[in-house]
Amino acid sequence: MADQADIERILRRLQGSAFRRKFSLGPVEQQLMRRHGAEVIDEHARRFVLERLAGANPPNDGRQTPWRGHPVFVAQHATATCCRKCLSEWHRIAAGRALDEQQVAYIVTVIGAWLDRQAMAGGDKPDPPGLFED
Ligand SMILES: [Zn+2]
Image 1: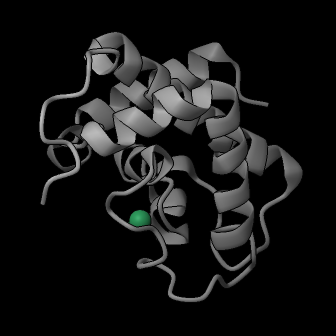
Image 2: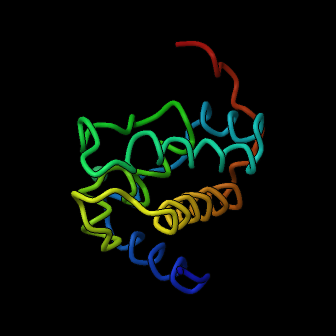
């Protein structure tokens, strides 16, 4: 089972990747965070993981996670929990096998930890003007 130190370690390692580091929540995702609160967002994370990642061979693997539109999607790219290939490369979770309950819990924890840090890094600022303009 992953403890706090494991989570810190993987988040630090991800920060070392120029690709992973560039992700941050946009205004739409920040607003969803505030509207739902961390607890509900965690439930969404769990649902996305179960629906899109947990099977042995998820459909469209590598393309099942949108780039934006929900804070969890952004967090998944930032934490390399977006597809089974990234899970195997970064988290040593073997592809081709259904995720077990412990692995699902670990992934949801990593996503939640990244979102916590985003909130601390200024995600609580008021919405910028023109949020819903295109
Ligand atoms: Zn991926």
